[in-house]
Image (cartoon, rainbow, N blue to C red):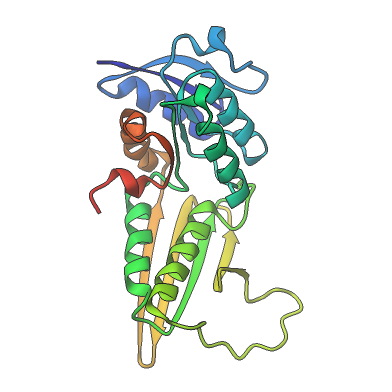
Length: 250
């Protein structure tokens, strides 16, 4: 059965690439392209069953709620989500009128990035130190990236489960924030540099050894296999799913 798809944020860099990927994918049909100013309603959604949102953090949550109300399953690639905003989506999906609806929110759809996050969580319990460095183009509006935040949270959870304490760090003064953001006890550093696309390094260290896990995405095309997979499979998981890894056999 062909899945009818609407793309929200269709005029953007990622959105236009998603539109092309949906048009090229077997079993998917692009039926609507929505962007800034377009109402999220039955007329503009044109009978879509699944919506893919690649917009901006300021509007993505409102879009998701509107799409749920319109009766669609939703795939979200926009970052900037918090535990509170996740909670509001869970609450919405639990309402009787949203029964059967599904939402997948993923910080990254590139398979290399999804695997590197998994590898980092597996390795984190075996190393004394762990830090994350994310590197993106200067047009990215949020820092740290959603991928880096998810990576840090995964590392922290694995270390907590293994009973490992904080990474050693003798820093006492850092008035300019040179040590970066701290997410669940893991330092995360954001680089914004012309010429980059989307890159991440996880650096783990023990006395006398170091492990570096790095993923490099050079083109938005790298996200499309994951987006297509999500559009096909989102309806199989009722409620809220966070992370593409839940659709992979990891």
